[in-house]
Structure formats: structure tokens, C-alpha cells
Length: 473
Image 1 (spheres, rainbow, N blue to C red):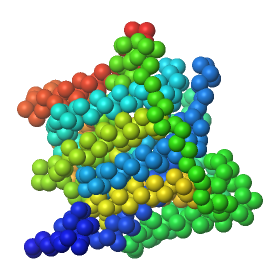
Image 2: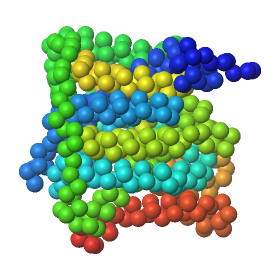
Image 3: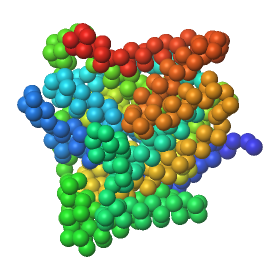
Image 4: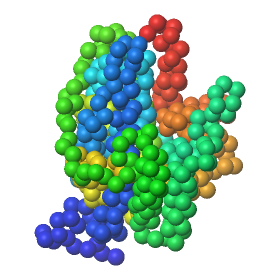
């Protein structure tokens, strides 16, 4: 079939190649809105994490409203850049896990101030950008065996499923030493009831193949949460902050940009050259492989991979993502990265960068409409995350389960991600075990030298804590 011709009067078709990818403007707008609704929680989770103080050093956390502003700004600008420059429906925002490294490791454990910790983010973002420009980052991605790429996608599906259940309150931390790591949350809760109804409703819409099922599920569950909260005196979601699951008292709020540029490279003098190298290396590995894992999973979900299981135009995706890390640090929003929640928009039919442009514009609107964005409770987005995890797990049927040299590393990749609550750890376990098993069974020809190098780097990554302890840093 011949590709439809574009005309000067059809700029969206010319820019995003909608017909070529089998999409329409309406589908892309719906997909972009779905991705935004699924990711909107980061506007409130990121300020909560970066607002964590360090009493030991007297370092106070960053102000909630200011972090919300820079989180929305970076997500909006860089997601639009991803759509326009790379033409893929991948959204960008402050990375979960990466912000935890900033708050709990760099500030909490190493005693850096938040500006100094953001300086580490800027440094690692610049380093990753150099690796992209030299082609090294893409070469590592191409060296990953197809089976591990699929396992990474499935593992991330399990990971975001756990995030969904944790956000809903169904899954909570275990009771402590000697007990299970995870436990069932209290079922005697109106909030749990809202989540259960939302999950069943969203699953019903998905099963009926209703267009916009995930977005409709989020909206309907939010309306239900507002109603239930009103019946409960407006106190059911009070622990999450003002406005959650409540009819907003105001629609507009002026953004606060005072955190822009509030970063410092003084971390080098504060923790020494070796400590600085280890800090940057730790964050870089986490960012490096989180992005690669997410990009692989999203590309597979959207059917973007070519016959060699490579993503056409991958350098464009990686350069935008790398610059997003720099932007996140410079804006004090923590390292920004490609979001696996983009899969929700892809599941709704998003196939071009127009989806990302819509998502980015909504993030920019959130600069001024934060009271409205704050209405959505985590119980409303949790069903969408869980069902996206279901979609992403389907790839496991394509794994060669009879070849244990591949199946065991693939299995470890999938299960370590949710169990360790870390995409990076899951990929690391998969890489290291794949390399070691292939060497032990004499199948050295199956190994790419870059795969071996990545495995060595992961070995160093896992040993950073004992190395740091031995060296006294």
C-alpha cells in the first residue's frame, strides 16, 4: 500500500507521519492524555521525596510547591522535545528511584545539601550525554540479547504492577524483622474499596476493548474517590496533602520557579574526588539502564522495533533522555528519564511523537492547574498501572524456556525488579548471570564483548557499598 502523500496544509501528518504509523490525531490526543493521567502522580510524589530533610546534618527538604513547579516544567519541556525530535510516544519526568538516590543516599547518607546533590545529577547527565554522542550508549543497547530485552520488558511490567498495588494500599511493607517483606494492607478501608471498584471497572472496560479504557477508568475512579471522601467528612486522603480526592476550592495557582538553577558542583570538594566519582557512577548506572530498560519495553509494546529488534532513531531518544537528566538536575527536580508509564498511552493507540507533545502540554498546564491535578488520588491511577503490567507480561510466551542459559537470567531479570523495587538491579542480575552461565557452559561465542563489559560494570555497581566501606568513603 502506498504511503499517503503529505501536503503543506497538513503539518501534523508531515511532522509526525501519523498515517505511516497507522494513527490519527484523535487517537494521539487520547493517548497523550492517558499517559499524563497515569504519570500525574509524580507531580506530588517527587515533592514528597525531595522534601525529605536530613536531621543529622540540619539539611531541610525542598519546598513542596516549588518542587511541583520544576517537576511539571521539566516533564513538560522534555516530553515535548521527545515528541518533536524523536517522534515516539515516550514521556519524560523525574525518575522514581533516581529521586530516592538523591534524597536518601546523596543527602541522607553522604550529607550533601540538595543543591550539591543536584550537582551530582547534572554531572551524571552530562556524562551520559557524552556517551550518547560517542555512540557508546546505543552500542551497549544493541549488545543486549533479544531474550533479555523481552525479559526486561516483562520485568518492568511486574515492577509497575507492584507500584500500582503499593499505591493502592493493597500491598504494604511487612511487619519487620522475621516477617514477610510485603504484606496485605488493611481491607477495612474506604480507600481500598475505591481502588477495588476502580480496578474492576477498568478491567471491564479493557476486556470490552473500550477506546480510552485506562483514561476512563482513572477519571471514573477519581469521581468515585471524591464522592466517597465527601461522605467520609473529607478526611480519608488527608495524609496525602490538601486537595486530594476533593472538589478543588480553586482552579488556578501561580507557579514558583525559584529552584531553577539551584545546583552546585561543590559536592566534589565536600566528599572528595573518589567519593564524587562513586556518587556520579552510582547515579549514572541507575539512570543509564533504567532508561534503556524502559525504552526497550516501550518499543516492544508499541511495535517500533525493526527485524533486528532495534529501535530506529534510538540515538534521538537517548540524546533527549540524557539532556533531560541535565535539565532535571539544573532545575532541582532530580534526574528526569523516560517513563515506563508511557506504555499506558501506547496501549491506547499512541504511535507517534504527537502523543508526547500532548502529554508535555498537559504537564505545562499543570504548572497553573496544580489544584486540579492534585485531585487525582493514587487509588485512581493504580488500576491503570496494574493493567499496563498485564499487557507487558504477555511477552513472556516468546522466551525460550527450554534453554536454561537464557531462561534463568531472564527469570532473574523479571523477578528481581519488583522484589528489589529497582529496574537497575533486575537488569544487573540478568546481565551478570547471563554472562557467567554462558562462560560456565562454554558458550562463549554467544557473548558480545560489550555485554561482558556491562556485566563487569554491574558487578562493580553491586559492590559499591563494600568498596566504599573499605575505602572509608
